[in-house]
Each structure stands twice: as C-alpha cells, then as structure tokens.
Length: 311
Image 1 (cartoon, rainbow, N blue to C red):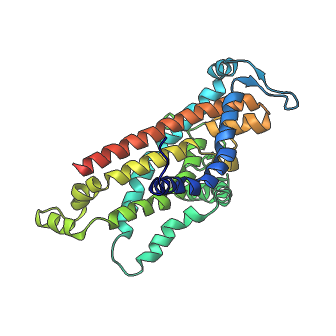
Image 2 (cartoon, rainbow, N blue to C red):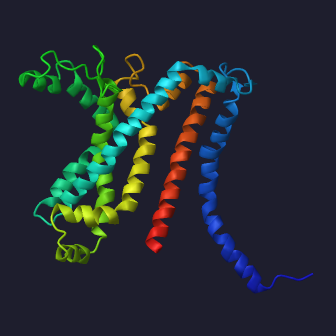
Image 3 (spheres, helix red, strand yellow):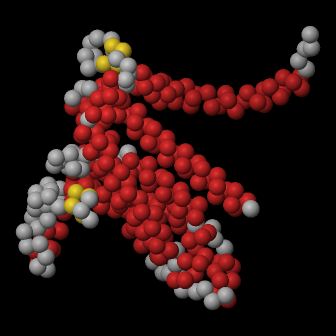
C-alpha cells in the first residue's frame, strides 16, 4: 500500500484550505437558508394550520387548492403586470441618467448624489411620503386641480372609481410601481455608470471621425457596448419586481379588491394573517420556481454575452 508523501500531504492541504475558510459561512447558510428551505418544501405537501400538532401529509392537496384559488391567480397576474411595467423603465431610464451624469461638468457629483438619494431612503419612509402625495388632498391632486385636470382628483390608491392604465393596470398598482421606479433609478444608474466609465474614450473619437457624434454615438456605440449591463439590469430588476413587498405593505396592503396585491404579499398574508403555514409554503414554492427561472435566464444571458465578447 502506497503511503502519502509530504508532497501529497501538501497538495491535500492546499486543496482543503479554501473549503475550511468557506466552512463557517456554509454552516450558517445551511442553518438559516438551506434547511428552512427544505422544511418549507416539505410543509407545502402537508397540513400545518395547528402549530401545536405535527404536520399531516396531504400530498398535492395544497397545489390543487392553489390551482383553484382565484386570488392567487390575480396576485400572480398583478406580479407579472408589475414586472412588465417596472422593468422596461428601469432598464432604459437609468441608462440615460448615467449618460447625463457621466459628463465632465463642474458640480456633476452633486447631480449623481441627488439621483442616488432615493436608493438610501428607507422603503417605509418612502412609502409614507408617497402616501401623502397620493392622498385625496395630497400634492399631486392639488396640482391636477390647479391646472384644471381632474377637478375631483385621481383615486391613486383607492381605485374608487376604478381606473385602469391602458385598460389593464389598476391605478393603485401603477401608483405603487411608481415608488419602485423612483427608488430604483439611482441604483441601476450606478451600475450603468460603471459600465460607461469602462468604455475607452478612443471609441467615441473613432466614432466621431466616422460621422457618429452627438446622440447618435450613443445609439451606435454606447448601447451595443453596454449590452452585458443592460442584460444584468433587466434580470436583477425583474427578480426585484417579482419579490416586491414593502411598497405594497406600506401603501395599500393589496387593496382595494386585491388590485394591488402581489404574490409575495399574498404569501405573507396567508402565513401571518391567516396562519395558513402550509399553503403559504406552497405559494413560496411557486415563487421560488419563478425566481429560479429568471436566475437561469440571467446565467444564460451572461454566458452568451461572455461568448460574444470572446469571439
């Protein structure tokens, strides 16, 4: 039987050392993330409304209930409306903001700070402030009355009378979307700004010689070079929009008539208001699958962008 040489022990030690450094973090993740996730997966196949009793295995009954739950499908629809309404704005608008604040002008850092300020404001504080703006006698309705538009104001958060943007999005849901957009602009602007500052100035000089200058240079050069960042922001903002909770909780609590209720808020409501723990775990499993799909899409996009850059 061959004995390990000192050189073999040294190689084993070198290979094990990184895992020893990772071990504390893996233990914490296992106890706080992975194990609770496995428990939630198991509970989605059980009935666990009475926490004083052990969960009872009921198979796919929760999933059948979910399939027949009209409120769940409405919250899922609202979540996708949220995604489709927020993501395009958060992909396009921060890019133009980043282009604006990437100019070499005196005092430009103040503008960068101003655009980034909403990011550091607590969502609770932002929600309360926007509630005041949206109030029946709030600033927005006062401005509309002053200029002669909507003399009776707009029911931003009450949907009374019901108003739908483009005939699809309830005004209460759109009002909450506006807060998410307002808070996200500065965050994604910084991501784009990092990408813009990595583009060599020679690229734009060469483009100017070819006749591509002014706004056209951004269409011809900036957007193609920023594709990896555009894809990154699209996926991150999509995942964030899918998981939105704080804005809904602070501003509308999903009302009226569940018009602004998203899937995460519905999960919270079932778990902590109705104490339907197992049913909430089932909703969480569906949410996990949606986010997993978006994450896989992000990996595929990143891989394709990496292959294109290599080519």
